[in-house]
Length: 157
Image 1: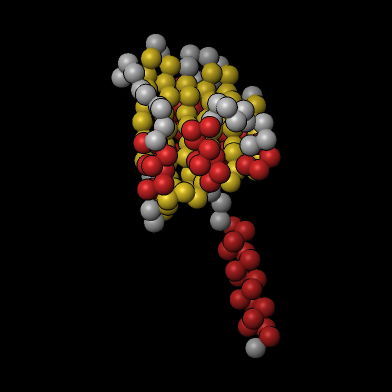
Image 2: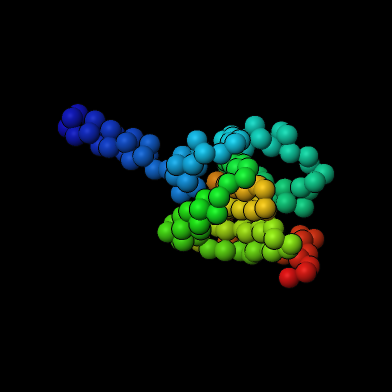
């Protein structure tokens, strides 16, 4: 009985350690290629986010558990294609995309059972390629309420 319990606890521990977020796999694969990267828990990063700038999204930022940022400078188009394949393979849904003067901004989310587990923002310009991954645990209905209540207005689309 004791051995069975020990095996069960060990299996659960190994399973929990092995589960990684989807964006984490992209981050780990391309971390050496980027010019700057940071991975930090939200409780630490939220100290440095100006509260006035994100006041209307404070409910969203409360649900963020972890931030991962990658900045690539002067990278080839192959990195953008690899990222797009990653997004497609992991079945992220696109929330919106904006193109202006050669610059692109795309926002994706990964949902599991009506809960948004990850939000990924891709910003691409002629010189830079920035990817921001947010690990969250927010219900889709709550996310929709936050976005509906915001002053976010997309123009020029």
